[in-house]
Length: 174
Image (cartoon, rainbow, N blue to C red; front, side, top):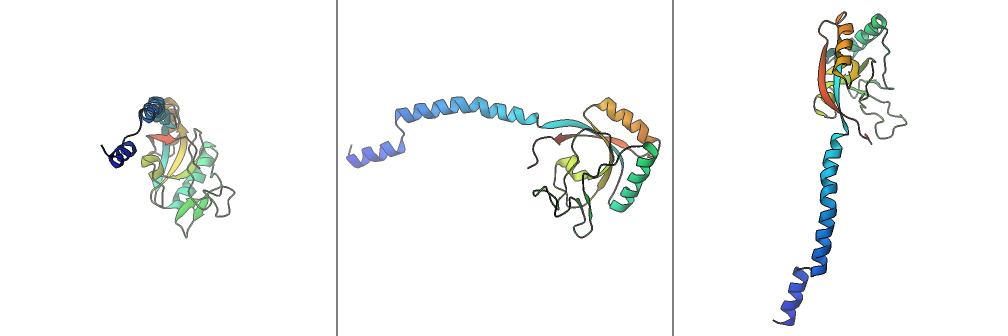
């Protein structure tokens, strides 16, 4: 074998020490990567969302939200968001302290019995909304029984209210 062929083979095939190092790295990383996949399941909450109503008209639902708040004595949580008619979007103000979500939609995610206007797209398939169907949420819970109790209260005033079961991402949004 010529010197040139020997050099090319040594470049193409790693030395035995390199093979051992690669096998050790793979042995260490494989369980970690597998755990990371399982661990990502913990970033999602099985959620039961009580939806009082839905519409593509923000202002109609907003009015209904205030009426339900008065009737049921349930707090409204806008999360500092409003409606930007130029963007056709429920969003934080453009000058908000949260630089990443300033001027953007930021969803309600944690269990609570509060009224808010949200986008169905986010809860149905995790998509970033750009307008569309708005839902009037009355409750988010991680327990079906709690959602069913909340639904009974809402049904007294909104006969079309229902529970929407989904998974909500609970990890960092930044």
